[in-house]
Amino acid sequence: MSLTYLLDEPEQPCDSAIIWLHGLGASANDLQPLMPLLRRQPGLAGLRGILPQAPMRPVTINGGLAMPAWYDILAATPERVINQQHLLEAAAQVQALVDSCELPAERIVIAGFSQGGAVAYQAALTSTVAVAGLVCLSTYLGGKPDAPRQDIPLLAMHGSLDEVVPESLGLNSADWCCQQGLMVDYQSYPQGHEIGISQIKDLAKWLATRLTPLQPAP
Image (cartoon, rainbow, N blue to C red; front, top):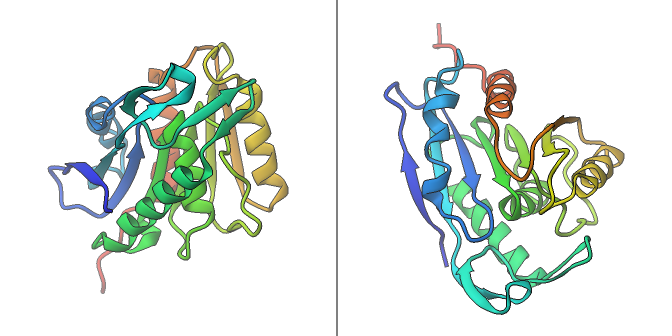
């Protein structure tokens, strides 16, 4: 099955895209307000937002309550025990979304917050094509691929006061990626499980370095 998604188009001609994956129990609409903020950064005026929506499914750690979720979480101790099949299916759907985009992979960034970040990790690290970048906020590795890609720059951001996903999980995930040979930029913020304005500004600057506007052919 293909993902349903919200498309947020720039006013300027589109020259790049970010695929944003929301967190557990959230929706694609929650991330849409970030798009105008990112486009304020010089070089990102043509950034398209592709905001997928997770399916409704029961989540074990939430008493089996059905909610938007990329995968079921069986336990949190604080290491997450998750349904690996759900994770792989979600990652494959994101990869298909990259393939179906009219932009080349090197003009696309895969990003995710919390549970969406775990899917972003899996999708980018196991992709057959190298995207422009991987952004993982307040999240963790849901799985550790045997042969992850090494040619995708990673921006990992986490709140030092996060009580939902402890920062130790974010640090361990970023460290593992670094050990695999990825170029990793890790940034910590004095905040909880959220996306703060300072974070958005830093993210925009990082994206601009990865998505330098295309130059017209001579």
